Every structure is written in structure tokens, then in C-alpha cells.
Image 1: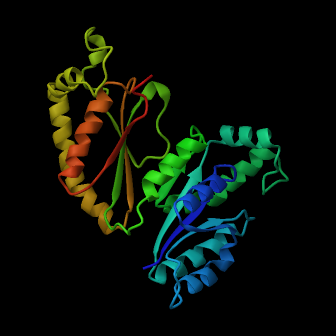
Image 2 (image 1 turned 90 degrees about the vertical axis):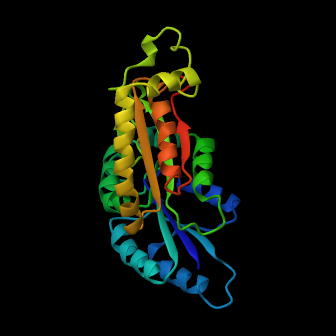
Image 3 (image 1 turned 45 degrees about the horizontal axis):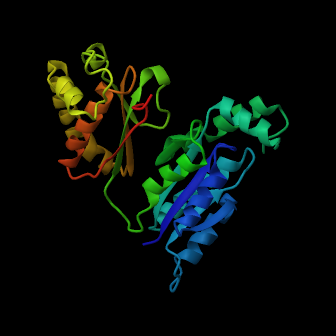
Length: 284
């Protein structure tokens, strides 16, 4: 079965960088792909004797008819029997403005001022973002971090029917992660920060872990998470969701959220998943 990844998103959010990463992973990449040509590429890839199985189509810049052209082509691609995933790259308006001002390039919708062009493009792409299998916000990512994120999601050469799950711990004082599906706030758990001997340590240390998991609030919360995901995971899979990104937040992202995120991995693993975890603010 052939496999397609459609890379789309905001202009300036990193589509060209993403294309380079996929090339390094030995995908066949077509950059600046006009939506109207997707059906022709699909026909060639699915032709008997074709040796091209994994294809990345980086959708090129377009005008107001961009989505009108893309949606029927995507529907036709999905109906062809290929595995299709949409990767949407996003970034904050402020960062996009900085990137454009830094390169002095003109926005593809240029004409009404940069801020207005970005607003119009965001509005135009809203429905596509809602339908995307994966959304990566590149606002706080450098080129190397974006590469690592894409590699972690697409490095496997095999078609994996199991939903891939990522868990991230974070601190609310440093902002909420942008590209997640579910966010859980664990600031109701007693804070190890106020225990002098625990303050220098992190949720990866046994003393902090034992303290957090000894709290009745943590025990009850993890039990309810277990019940919740017993319901949610099969429901997500029935709907064909390929990726699930879960965030666990506390005040500083160093103690409680780290412990609960690690415990959440156990909940996912016992149900047959192989989740990945990252602790965004653990070193701050």
C-alpha cells in the first residue's frame, strides 16, 4: 500500500525545512505541489510496477482558491486506497512577521500588508488545520528541533496501524504547548517545590516521584485518567486518528507534571501503545 503525507500550513512556518527532513528519511518529495496535480501523482505512484511507495507532497503557495482545489484532490487520494496523512505546520503571527521581516520576502498573498495577509491566510487554512492528522507549531522550534520532531513521527519505514501517542509535561508559567490535543492541569496536587529537600530535584527523581504519588489527589486523578483513556483510545482509533498528543501541566513543569506524565505512559503501555514522552520545562 502506498503512503502519502501532505505537508501544508502557514507560509513561513517551515514547509521547506520539513521537505528537507523527509528527503533525508528517503521519502519521495515533491515540493511546491499544485493541488490540481495530486491526482496525476497518485495515478503514477499506484501504477503497476511503480517502486515509489512513500510520497510527500508539499502543497505550494496559493491564492484564495487554494482550499477549493485541495479538498476534492485529498478526497480522491484517500479513496484511492493509499494511506494519507496531513501534516499542518503553524506558527504564531508574531513569529511569522519576524521571519518575513528577517528574510525580506513577500508574503504569497501580498498586497494588504503583512499582518493582514497572515490573517487572511490563517482564515483560509482554518478548515484544513482542523482536518489535519498532525499539527506542529514551529513558533518556538529551531530547524534542528523541527527535524527531531518530524523524525520521531515518521522515521519508521513500516506502515504502523497503531495510533502514535506523545506526552509532554510543561510549566504554565512558560506557556501552554500549542500543538497538543488534550491538556490536563495537575496544579491541584500538593507542590514538592515547597519541600526544601525536594525543590532542587525533578519529577524523574525517586524522592519527588514518591512524594507526588503518595498524595491522595494524585492517586484519584490517575485512576480517573485510566478510566477516561479506556474510553477515549478505542474511540479515537475507530475514527482513524493516527496521532494523539497529550500535555500535562503544573506551575513550573519540573515536579508534578513530570511525575504524572511518566505515570500516564504506564496507562498507555498497558493498553498496547508505545508512547513517547518529553519534559519541555524540566531544566528551567
